[in-house]
Length: 194
Ligand code: GDP
Image 1 (cartoon, protein in one colour):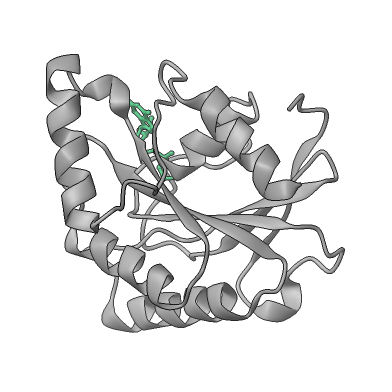
Image 2: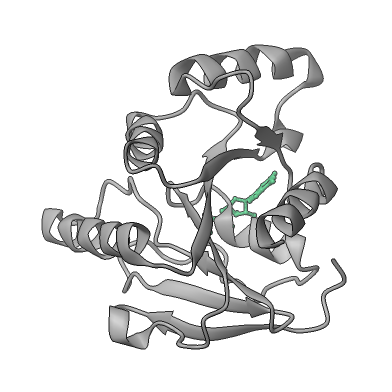
C-alpha cells in the first residue's frame, strides 16, 4: 500500500473520544517497549509519527492513527510494566477489554511479541484471552534483527509452543531495524481490509 496520508487522529482515554467515521481498525497490543510504535512507523514509512519509547507510567492512551483515510491503526497501551500501580493496571485492563470486546469497527488484533525472548506470562494470557473471545488476531514477533539466524528456528519453535499456535496460524517475523517482514504484514493488512 502506498502511504499518502497518515495522521494521529486522537489519543483517547474513553469511548466517547473514539473516531466516529466508521473506518475499519487494526489494533496493536503488546508489552511496553516491545516495539509497537516502531512497527507502525516502519509500516507507514515514517520516522516518528507513532510515539516510540513513551515513558511508562505516563497517561496511557489509545492512539488512533488514520491511514490513507481508509483505516486506523489503534496503538493500545502496553502491558506488563512493573512500575505501574495496581490501580493503573486495572484501568488499563478495563479500557482495553472494553475496546476489544465491543468495538464493531475492529477487524483484527496484532499481538506484538519480542522475538528475542520466550513469550511472557502476560503475552500468553493476552493471546488466550483474544482466542477465548474469538477476536481475530495474529502474532507479529519483532526485533528479529537482534536474533542470530542460527537461533531463529529455536525461538520460533518456543514461541509456537508457548502460545500453542496451530500450523494454520500465521506468524510474522518482523524488524523495524532492517524492515524484515514489512511486505508480508502489508499483504495481510490488505486482505484484512478487503
Ligand atoms: P513500544 O513501547 O511498544 O511502542 O516500543 P517502541 O517502538 O517505543 O520501541 C521500544 C525500543 O525498542 C526502542 O528503543 C526501539 O528503538 C526498539 N525497537 C523497536 N523495534 C525494534 C526492532 O525491530 N529492532 C531493534 N533492534 N530495536 C527495536
